[in-house]
Length: 309
Image (cartoon, rainbow, N blue to C red; front, side):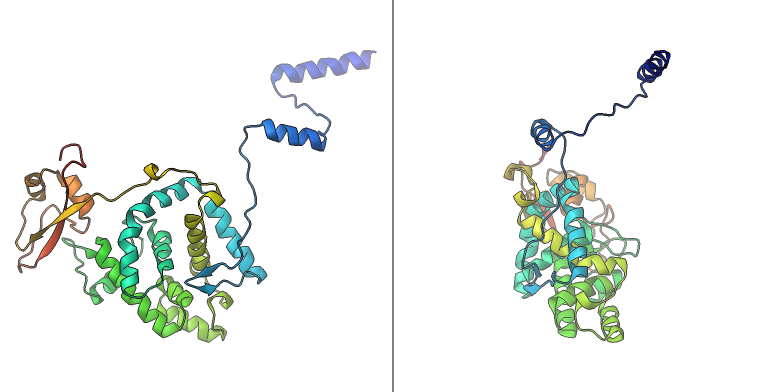
């Protein structure tokens, strides 16, 4: 009897201190199902890999166990990174209509728009290596392909012009390497880098290459984002069209002179400097040097879309 009293005292002590953990009999299967049905807890599920995954019509060999696991990883990571996923849906609605016709004009498969998604998240990103813009173009690559790149004007931030440059690079990579998959990988690792690894490892396919972490995940990330962005409901993303971002209509103004003060310039068109820069991020300073009289096209938003316009 004394032992029982001592045990009850110990139980009471744990209850009072908030440290007691109740040990209960494991619920039956029916009880577990009933609890799941009535619970509001968040649930995580395995993601089923679709059959016939491909990039630009080139099949991904998911019957290979290594390829399967790597693809499964990227689909899981991006499915459950919900905040980032929703942002990609929102931004895609705004930027894909600009990118898609340029890809089509150059004969580049539409799937390459998803390369831009993983490169920058469809933002004017800045990399530690010096790449800039939605397509993450390096300074030398930009200049070699006709972009103006300096402190005053940096056309790597010009979406249409930088997409044109990306197309040129990808077409050359396809010619050099023979497949769109390898061309996409070369966008990350360079044509020379991919060619060297293919030669050293005596293989001909991206999925047979042993690569570093970033390039090794590259194609799997692209295909994962493609799959999710094409099938939002399948991966649990719910939104209305009104939730997505859209482009503000603009009209073009040609400038062939120096502009000393873009704040004053913007004010002349009923907007402020911030709005001017939103629509022309390639203007890197609050003035335009333009000693040569070069013609620049500046986009001005139509009236009525901003509170003060």
